[in-house]
Image (cartoon, rainbow, N blue to C red):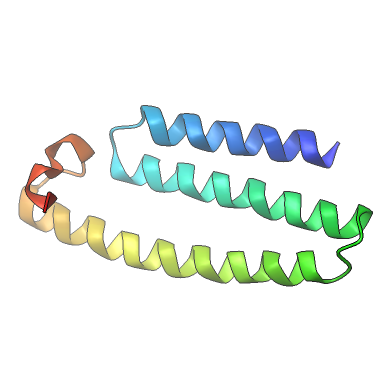
Length: 96
């Protein structure tokens, strides 16, 4: 059951990242993917032989997601200040 919910969250996140043009929508898709991975880690630690390792890794992913959200929000705000849009198709000047 947990793996099915995790798979649904993961697929919803991937679809959201692939279809959204708004940077905030893409970031929400990334968060859904990370939450699906967290649910997988916790389910495997509960029903598998990982013990607390899965839960510790899940906490690490949560901290990583919070740091990613803060950095990505700063980038989105800076991009909005320069271009007055958060459309990811307009981000051609970020190519290196």
